[in-house]
Image (cartoon, rainbow, N blue to C red):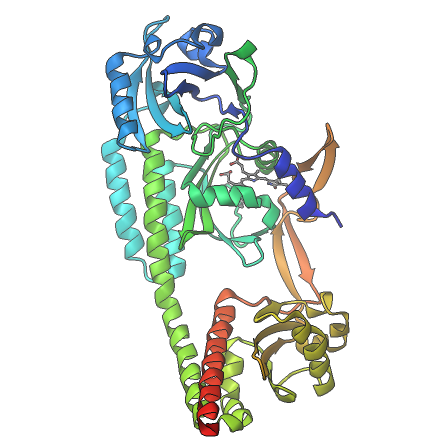
Length: 516
Ligand code: BLA
């Protein structure tokens, strides 16, 4: 097996996503020193669009390139901390006057000006865009179930952007992900239901998407364009392009999209409480330029849908939370009334406790007393796992779908305790554990290509990833694992831990008073 984590870490140390030193070639990038307003870095393609060489532009004041009135607007926007200034910028005549969609942002002492030729945008479709956005919001908010909402979102985004395929990709607890909704052009292969390993979107890229709503890749086959600075037209180091729309794409992701047969892509982030929950991923099989207005519409929808989705999800979770609360209340009342009858209180609530986490068995351990309920490993095995694992590790909450991979003796009770979810209280005088058990369950995961088919090659002493070549359905039969614990079930266990803690504390205060 490849040690992906180490290799991935090393790879990202060498290639920091923020500092590629290059851009995608559908626009040009100009770096201006804020103090002097001189042009200090440019992308090496300005000649193609402006008909002036980098050498002749570097070191020149900004008003050599654009009018003072436009410079003033830029300065006012910067002063007002306007992070998203956009303006039609007409450059001075070097050969032809060209109109650009210009965006600016400030990075440390520099201003980054990104120019995208207006002719790439095609017709001005703003009024139509407004209607489409309006419809998207109406249709999404009136959809009935969460599943229907996901589906409607993909259809609406496809109507606005006309991508060949639009899908919703949701992350699982282990970082892998699954396509949960899709809308696509007829004849295009479906990815619905397929799973993708976590390394397909590495951690630095996820962190980036959690901060930026949108990422566009216009043409994976177009050469990237280097940014050069005045000193011998060398490649400058350390220009942070995290907020640049033109930022070039990581080489291994380019290869990934090529292997998928995709030529252009756009991703819109879906966030839940500032955490990346998933992405709306859009694919096109030929180069595709997405203009500023459509990008903004996509960003807006991403923000709106994030809020809407999580509102809907909350509604769905509400009934589950009520169930948790019910069990919490019953336990609390029972325990406060008769703390010495813990065993009885738990036994009385056995079924709701087991159902709450969709497990098959439960062990309630109060110091050295262990009570087993439902289908669990044997008494001696549970005793061993508490002594040699839980008490040693002292984790308040612990869960795994494959206990034997961490605790070899677990192999002996896979049929009942392959998956474990435990909550523990380590108090001064007492130790309590609640341990839920799930049996081994053989099940199949439909992957988009064999996820183990990733190789790392050393090129110039840098480990380089080569993404898998095929994304054809590859079914993995999972063994030695239980069904994975879901975040809501873990949350339910955490909630119950609070009850235990509260009652334990209240009880100790009560006993102290009795002793006084
Ligand atoms: C970025 N990887 C991405 C993005 C997606 C995926 C959506 C965002 C950029 C984009 O819009 O294209 C992955 N795309 C998917 C998945 C589906 C999809 C899972 O459509 C499912 C249908 N990727 C690899 C390997 C590496 C890698 C081996 O497979 C290397 C470590 C890296 N992916 C990678 C990087 C980025 C990325 C570095 C960031 C690209 C960037 O923004 O420059």
